[in-house]
Image 1 (spheres, rainbow, N blue to C red):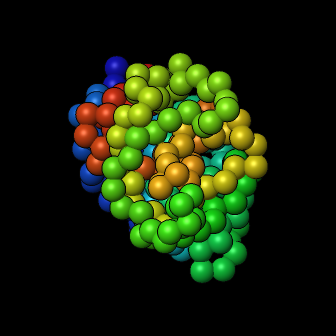
Image 2 (image 1 turned 90 degrees about the horizontal axis):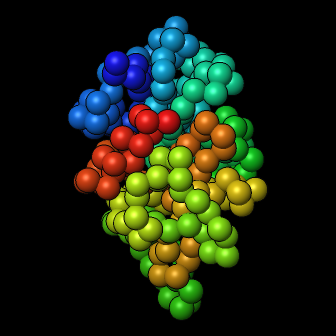
Length: 215
């Protein structure tokens, strides 16, 4: 049976591209703004583009924040993508300070404006980068959304802000922008987040979606 996967519609994000990727990988994908649909889902995907505060405001005004938090408490798989990953954290610093969902302790701050060589680089970062376990940490990707992803595999990023979880154990993967480590993926129990766009990351991204559906 195809897993019933709800893509949360709160007025932000390229929902159709996410839905097409999920369907290609074997899910029954449904775009919905209905809290009841979220409650009945096997899996939930929370996309997001734009500013942290705007995304949170849309969730709140549409009455979806409570439904998402209740879903997370059921231990069913949950995936946030891009800003949908960022708002899993407690605080976002984009255009002021804004409260997030608080599922993962930590802040979302501007990515470094310079590389480790001290030279300025472009922000936002737009492009492909390899993802790796965090340095000095024995991180196993087994039984996660990266279970069949090779270390160093390239995925596609578009962002100016990055997550900084308080607990390093919540960092599943990083990438390096001119030597600066930036959080690429997070995990807290059944909740996952990707700063990159798996739906735009070719075969590597599709495999990540397939592994999410296998959880």
